[in-house]
Length: 268
Image 1 (cartoon, rainbow, N blue to C red):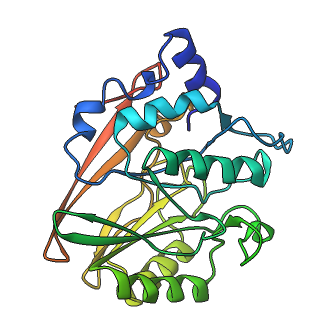
Image 2: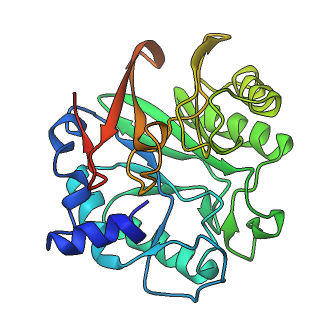
């Protein structure tokens, strides 16, 4: 989340890359870097007036480029904070910088395939938090609003295009350290339907990672960059490193990354 206090710190230090300065080298180890973008990056739209409304200025794109992100989900409960115009503008700005956005726009439900080192990996992004009225249609841009049917259909398409399928889902309850029954149901349905990796976010705190049905479920990665300095739990996130070979997951490692008081993630 690159608005509010995070933006303030970047401006205070006269560097829009500031949030990522201390973690850059660690992130550079990844062949493909994925995250959930909790604030649109845009100067379009207008504030919808919610109690927490996030939109970072276009200059904050410098940090995402510097960090080396390859794929970002733009499907979450803040996707429409500044109307669909900001969402569409964010998608276009990411694409212009060769960062693949998932879960938003006219093609919100379509799998996006990244190929690296001979591995084809499909990414799908959904949100179950927000409003079903934000759902994209064939003629109106929006987000990939979660339904069982839409996810199953997306995973089927993804498996036709790639060797490995990653599903990103914005779900769960804020500040809860354990996944609820619906998170578990959705995640296991994803694996049972052909996904290999499920990445969850929204609770703002770390939740467990488990192996299931030959796949991996990370129920909540917590906060990586966010200005929620009111607790130790909200000032940390999980860096999940997944190793892939021959179209399958061969291992994973998880590392807790804590933010300093300037909301910069700092490697251990």
